[in-house]
Length: 279
Image 1 (cartoon, rainbow, N blue to C red):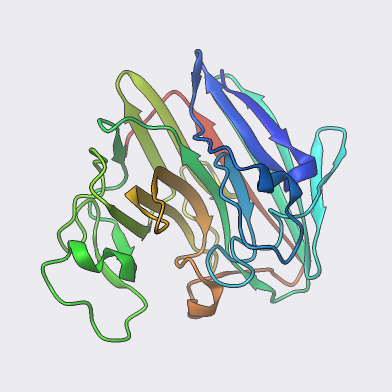
Image 2 (image 1 turned 60 degrees about the vertical axis):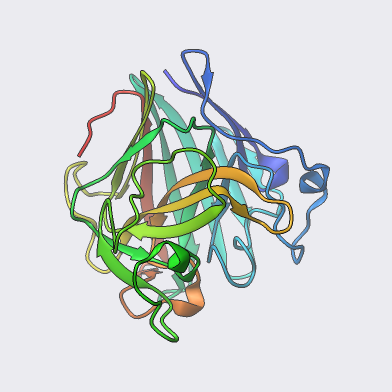
């Protein structure tokens, strides 16, 4: 069973994800996080942040993380200028599910990520669909054996070694930080004997089915082994179920962002479980 604690007053942030005595979420003590208001630069305190309508770009990490959410029964809700996001978390026999509903004008394009920073050992491994299309972003350039194409916002390879670097293994700090987006709906994290699986599906789709047409489902990875930020880097690992295929909405092509349908509502489900079924 997973125990989840959230903080509606501070962006709906998930502050604890605990199973069998283990805390999965990484934390960093930053008092400024509790004082953040819309328009502030992102404050990285760890946990799981709700990023919408973008991750990178403007506003940095989106518009929801810095706003107070309201709670009505078991549902949390945040109202932003262009959308309203609601979230209901419920326990399941082997974990938890979070149901989301986004209400906005039809055609509203966005990225959403469950920006989960996990507390993992250097021996941890990440398991996603072998061969899945994986986008690498420019900070990965020092790890490649080839020059980064001039002006390219990303390059593509195959999981787990897109264009060379092995992203499924963490290892000790090496001074690098790499962002990637993997075309899959499921990631299983192994750390010693502990397991955590994170998966994403659009609502009204069978659990094993494909996402609804036009809604890109991905797993974003932030593999920071002491390479970010400068001049005072720290280690953090983000495993982030995502609607979208890029980090910055400004870089999103026609198929790279989610879009609200004619009904004005879009629904999806995030599943977390300790009963890992590796792809």
